[in-house]
Amino acid sequence: MVSHGVKYAFSPEKKKFDLWIAQGLRPLAFGSRIVLAHSLRGHSEEDEGLIFRQTRIGTDGVPFTIYKLRTLDVNREPLNKTAQHFRRYGLDELAQIHNIKRGEMGVSGRRPLPVEDHEAVLDYASSGLVDKWNRWVLPTRPGLFSTFSLRHHQQAFDVQRPQETIAPWADELLESDLKDVKEGSLGRDMRLAGQVLVAMTRGEL
Image (cartoon, rainbow, N blue to C red):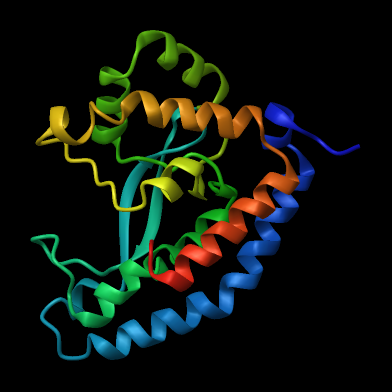
């Protein structure tokens, strides 16, 4: 029996789909790491390592360590042109297949936010939406992409400017996550994955 809606988020079908996609992305993730490492030879940031680690909010609100390829310097500027292209095409996110294999993330699902951003979004969103989001969305695994992250791929939250960068989007973010969970299905995941692929080829991530 095929699962839909909230049940799908916890179903064997979704777990198998996530692992299948992660396995398919492994060669691209490995190749991307080699290319970035080669481009950073002799760079001042080389000693920092290729992998950037950050604490994000995971399933049931439990913090976990997310992995990304290091593409920004301490001033949040691209390390070089290769790093800039990696960010544009979403290649820096491929390190998160490690999170998928560990069961901390899925392919689709709410994008896990840094702790401060997560708290700020919940502070600015409508209380009724926050209650629903905590009930239906927070217990699910976060993902590589969501409908919101696809639609607003260039939207960056800044806790130093919350009224400008967080407040205008807080309700839409929670509403989008709720819709993703309530309408979840294998077919929907496949369509979203296709949209991500198109966005990657266009350099819109």
